[in-house]
Structure formats: C-alpha cells, structure tokens
Length: 230
Image (cartoon, rainbow, N blue to C red; front, side, top):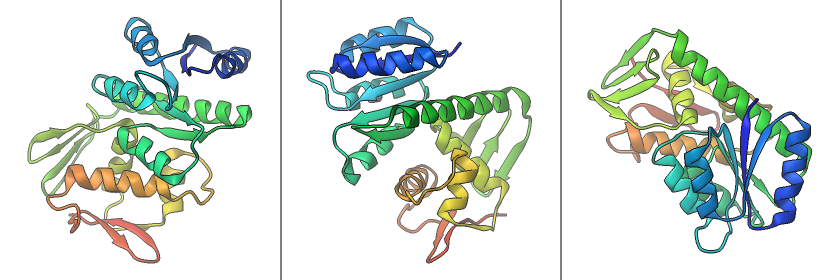
C-alpha cells in the first residue's frame, strides 16, 4: 500500500484529499504546516507528497527544498495561484507536477497514480538494467541510474534522469514537445509545453558547458528538440 503525505494549512482541503485517497486504497499522513510535514517525512516511508505552496511560516517551497536535499520522492504542488510563473517556479524547485486550486479530485487521483506508476518503473529500472551509455563528456549508467559529466556525478531528479535517458537512447532524432511528454511523463499531451521547457532548461543547466549555447540538447525551431551525440 502506497503512503501519501498531504500538506495544507486548510484543514478542509486536507480532509477532502484524505477521504478520496483512502477510498482509492492509499495510506495517508496529514500535516497542516511545513514543520509537521518535514517531521512526518523523516519518520515515515512516504511514496508521494501532495504539498500546498502558500503556508505560513515554513511554506511549501521551503519544504520542497529540504525534501529535495535528501530525496527524489514525487511531489505534487497545490496552490491557489494559477499563474504560469508559479507553475514554472515549482517545477524549477523540483516539483514533479502542479495543480491549481480549485482542483478536480479525480484529476488529482489520476496524477497521483501516474506519478507512482512512473516512480515504480524508475525503481525497477535501477534494479534490472546494466547498460552504460557514453556520449562525449557524458556517461549514463543505467545500472545505478546515475549520469556523469567528465566523470563527476550530476544530481538529477527522477524526471530529469528519465528525460536524459530517453534522449541518450535516441540520439540525433528530433522529438516534438508532445512526443517527449508522452514518452517521459507517460500521459496524453494536452498542450502544456511549459513542463517540457522547464525540464529542458534544468537539464541544460546541469549538462551543458554553456546552457545558452548547448552542445547536446538543441532546439529545432518549429519542431522540438534533438540530442546530438556520437
């Protein structure tokens, strides 16, 4: 049984999410502020976090930063703010998905299931694969699910790893944003290109010598992206 940590200072929202998640067979933990959330996360085995951004004292962004220091556990951000800048900020900080309030509970459940499914696939890949791919100054070791640049390990989130893994296995091929989203995120692409753009930007910051003039992940205007390599 997967465990979900629900964090929001609005108790009605926490209870609502808790009710639906339990009805779908999940074990749940509830926190009403950032401090409680971190204490529970440290003590319990949490498989996914549903995290509100706007909370007093320790807000969701700070909670996310502290979790990401030690864990790549999937995190869904919730916020009353629906502006694009908030979504982009959350993704850059390391969130895996984002829902603006008010949200549809069925959509939230679907996103939780999708994240848990991809997390399981990622962990199974770590256990089963023994392939090493080398490309110029980059090395992808699928046995350990680690990526190295000039023999120095690059710290990646699970989605960053899945994206670069897909790219390196499909070198010199052009992919649209929709194709990348469906291959890496495993969901039907509905035109939200910002998630892809943010993750491409994050990867470039980590693997490129000059992210503004990338050698690996190149933009093909009007089409999408290509990973150039040997």
